[in-house]
Length: 348
Image (cartoon, rainbow, N blue to C red):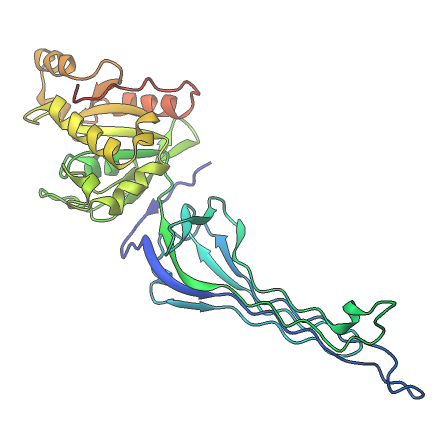
């Protein structure tokens, strides 16, 4: 169950590059036991200790990677050497990096996803430390009673890495800049995003917990506005499109005073398709904002322009018209297993 709070994302950071090095394993010991009556009582060299891991841990209290902005180099401790009397060296101290849920760890060179954190307290060994070398005791055999060698420790792993945050929210608000997404979020939740009459008021994702009929609730993300060409990096581009990948339901917000409602939807839909075609398999709802400006005839005209495969409704954040119906529609979409019907290419 979601807690009822407001997420304030000032100084929001969702992407960082860091240099990581896990610990080197300690060398195994080449040592021979000495007793009162025998200076060479046999090998007793212990194994080296494991090098420290670099571990990612999920933390629900974090909503940004801001705390890691100046944490550019992460080095785990090396393991200690083994010693006589079959004593194993101490393992290197692990480094634990706490990250918000929805964080993905990637290799900077290959782009390969190496870890993903989705649950509170989840721990993933991101970069394992090197194994400790075996002491000479391990190599003793019937034919070699006094091995005079031991293994060196295994090197740690180092390289540049990326941490990338994709906001976890049930519903993502999709629309052009100044479409009224922030206003809607402020009405349906306790969130207080910045609202003004100019494009790109929202420069960072804003999360709001929406109370729904009793003690139920769901999370809605107000994402920075999409413009035509966003999939190619225009406007805020790829920086925020990736957050949509985490949403179960996409709520397209189109203002009633738009010059061309169908065209506006087509552009938004097309940008999502170009960025990641998998986004089109999500459930979608269209909300026409500023619905209090429309009479029945105008509503019918707009409805005729919109795709039949996607449900739509008219709302007004000023008069609260249609807000209850919108919450009902979102809750139903979030809690039904039925897969959405894929809308055909708007360009056809």
